[in-house]
Every structure is written in C-alpha cells, then in structure tokens.
Amino acid sequence: MIVGVCEQATDAELVARYRRNPDLFTDVHDRYYRDVYLYVAGRLDTQIAEDITAETFLLAFDQRDRFDPERGTLRPWLFGIATNLIARHRRKETRHYRALARLGPEPVMEGHENRVVTSVAAQRMQPHLARALAALSGGERDVLVLVALGQLNYDEVAQALGIAPGTVGSRLSRARAKMLALIDKEKVHG
Image 1: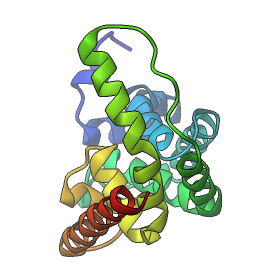
Image 2: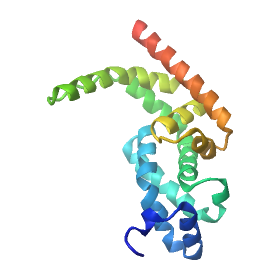
Image 3: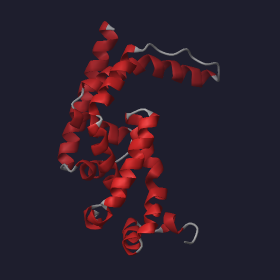
C-alpha cells in the first residue's frame, strides 16, 4: 500500500478495498483506532479501554460486510459498536463513577501557574461530575459522552446509537440540565 493512501481514501473507498481484500481492514483500524480508544478511555479506565477498543475492531472486522456506506461513515459505526460494548459494562462504569465521586481531589503537582489553576479546578469538580454522570440514565450518558469525548455531531451520535437525531437533541438537553442541577446541588450540599 502506498504511504498516505489510508488518510486520503474516503470511507467508501476503504470499504470497497477491504471487501476485495479483508487484510486491508487494517486501514480502518489505523484511521480510527485513536478516536475510538480515546472515547472508550474517557468512559472507562485505560486498561478496559484497550480491551473494549480491540473488541470493537474485532467485531467491526467480523461484521464488516454488514457496514452500509449509504447509511453513514465508518467513524460513527465504530463508535456505535464501542458504545454497545460499553453498555455491557454499564454496571462497572457506574461503579467507576461512584468510586471517583468518593475520592477527594489528588494533590496538585508543581508546574506552570495556569496549569495549576486548571488542575485544581478540574480536581475539585471531578467528584461532582462523577456523581452527576452516574445519576444520568444510560441513554443520556451515552449521548453526552459521545458528544463531549467522541466529538460526534448529532447525526453521527444518532447513527452510532441507532436513534433519531431529534432524540439525540432531547437526550443531550436533558443530560445537560440534569448535570447542571446535580452539580449545583453538590456545590451547595457537598
């Protein structure tokens, strides 16, 4: 394969290639592994993220003939597979957020003044955010995290979760409102 072809090829071209030669599915892996991994790592711990990301690409390879370029692009399709795998670990994910909420902020390491201020603010918010994320419904949490960590747009989230774009908007709106209310409540009472 010519260097740089993977980055220049459209998803439809990648699909056509790997359908002719399944070994070329590695181009899909090379293009999207980092995005999927970062999304999963944002939802779960990094060790589980490696496993789920690997399983995402294994399932995608096994189901590669089921991908329909007419319905969307590979990225949201892969995010949908990853989200479904995360759903299998939903209890573990919720326990993870609850454990984070119980932890106090970690000590701040020395460094540049802006970095310190940002780090302190993030550490103070971490327990509040973790509790608020744990309190969301699974659907609301999936939409919020796909937008925030996966940086998918409404149409891509809809494709990834198999729901209507309007449902994405309403779930995201509810999730944001709940998050703000829960965080405000935490600040007052916690």
